Picture 1 (cartoon, rainbow, N blue to C red):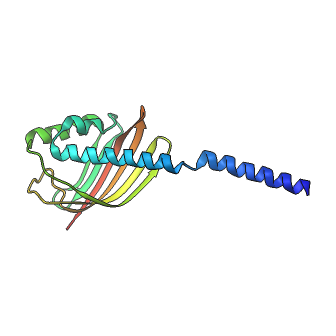
Picture 2: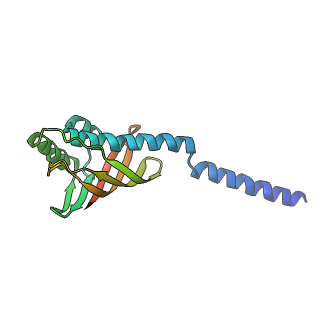
Length: 165
């Protein structure tokens, strides 16, 4: 009997040790999810508000970051590296300085969080404001990858497919 108790105690201890190191704390995850979604929301809002400083603050300034998108009017768009992304977005904002009043609806949000990396998928619904450089009207299938850098979540990848109406 004592042998069985030792076996169960060792097994239970092993399971608890595994779970404590591999299962995330739900309260911590909830806080992390809020922080991650806040970065995504701030990045989008600053893009449409033509606020480059806040847009820039949401991104990791690294060579490996990228934006990949597709829409029927322009086809595939791939922009790699923060220097290229930053210059392109800043120029777009300077060339089109009037804010684009968007308040997108996000549904089907799926967030997966690791130690210092997270990925998010969601459906985003935007409106048509006749701003061809900044509009994303209708349904857009979105993906974000974020890294935690010096304690703050930063975007390293944006993927979007503008499905439209």
